[in-house]
Image (cartoon, rainbow over all chains, first blue to last red; front, side, top):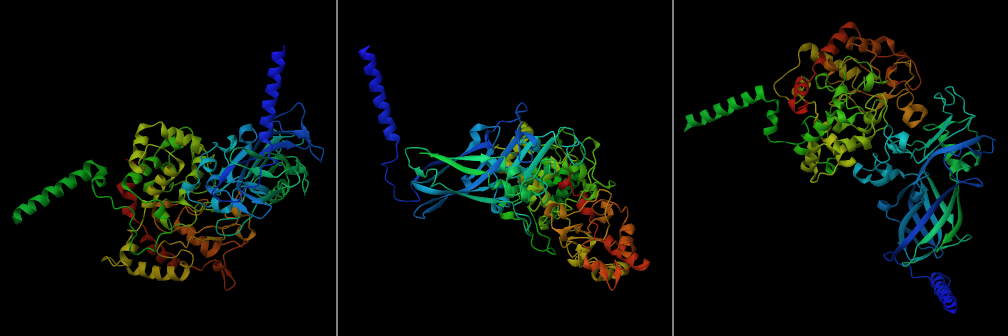
Length: 283
Length: 347
């Protein structure tokens, strides 16, 4: 018996030493050196208003500010060009060749954008929702990984490349709502689907709509990122998909069941830019 | 000694003749010259530094161009809608006729002189030849396949993995290699041996009187858009066709810029003999019909090209004689060598 207590006690003490070892309070801020890289991840944790994100939850649908009930059947978006900044103003941009991530609603593992940045204490994280215009006009050789036009198959299955108008879909959000009519102004297939495929990087040679959104998160309030070589600092963001409907310019699904390649795409992008909220940082 | 030389030449000549008859692939044994800029053409706009045309790459591209696996049910090749004998268009079809007998909304444009093209498709949207094939492959009415599936099908064919190895060093089939090979084939499809070209290069041919007068008329009335020597300035313009039943808005559909509404790419005037019907929706069955459009049928729709509204008149005045002479000149732009060049045919 005594032996057991002893075992438990020693286990607890080992654990607490372990915890203490993990505690970053006494970890001094390292000198900022560009070559001194350490891992950092940004977690894009999708939520829907006050509820968790679940695909096709027809038994308990979500409800937007217009009072429309809906479910989500598909969600994918590009996160790119990650940049970090310390309180002292030192900033570091991740090499563009390894700074493109496709966050997929159907694949939990895809929610982390994992990068390497110099050891340091970061108070700001900046990223792009979408694919920047430079990468959108690059030669085919540079379009690898999630940017490969062959990735993900066709548009019915997750493909994010617009062949007919050279560019990527930045944000692809589909679902169902009973408010959608069965005629041409809704979904003539009768599936009552809404589809938001938002792209538009600003045009090859002449300026067109630009829906690229650069988002900066201030980490001071909810926890700065202490990036060190021996651990994984994780900036945990909530991504509230309800903001698509209830953002700056609220709209109803019934009024705009399909937004792809038209001017209203800017309104949708203007709403989803506010989806991100820094919840906490795991250091 | 001299006699021996003649004998060798004669035997060699016979050999070539024999090859010509029996083996359309005679060129295979000739030295591959790669992409050659015709002396009367400007510098190409395609970035060859990023995709050097090689014999192996070109041959792979040609095989892929004529490969039905590019379509969902392995029935349609690029060559189905871009037929060499029709100067790589789909002769006789107003709009392209693709998989499962589905019809598109536009006329198949020619695969010709693409190295000089800044934008692709009748309504733009594609600005890099290396990205162009994705459009017909994935379009519902054309090949209706995903690029991912195409690459998987190609990977499963030993002939192709071997060809990829020859062209690119390893058997790996990537999107970039697949696209670059197709580009290599398409870039080689240069049409530059029409009578016009021979006259311009002073190769001993001269225009007839009608052709010459037609040429003068052409320079006066047509060349501002169909500029020499490609016979297009590559721009997008509204040529007054009026709206179509499907209300195709051209460039506007990809830019959403109001001033782009009803603008379509200015097509080249080369090889018109083989490429009827004309315009983006193939509505004109003959050259005569097309010329009459400019003479009397131009409609005042938004963004009508200013060239078609001069001196208070819509269109371009063309008398019957003008039309005859212009037709004579345009006839000098037909390139028989191009449509018969065995290098570009399915092997």
